[in-house]
Image (cartoon, rainbow, N blue to C red; front, side):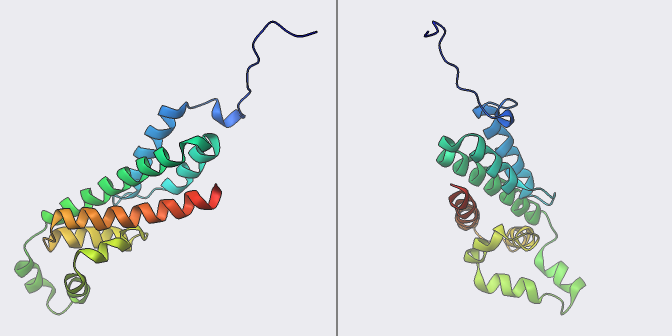
Length: 156
């Protein structure tokens, strides 16, 4: 005998705690903080959002990329506030090889900003070296997007 009540699709238990908007907000926050000097695992949050809401593939990918790019740019801004290059070079003497390497490669090296630890240092160094912020933002975003896309595609 058919029921007059509408059928309710049951969501898995992990979907009961956050709706789509809250999941994307948590993903943005996690992605932003993970790109700063604070430790974090935004990849796990991305995977969780995509498992819970597979239809959010592109919104989740875009939100994670935006949050992580803005976090990387916050490290860039921190670098802008460091002492100028001549003062620091005097103090460090010959220990500036990493900075010279970054200077020679310019903004495209920020494609590697997705790498743990090294990426944070690259973003700070780019700010300190006064690399053009728009170019820095572009290469940071491309690197972050590529990493998140690989992760998202692997689980989809």
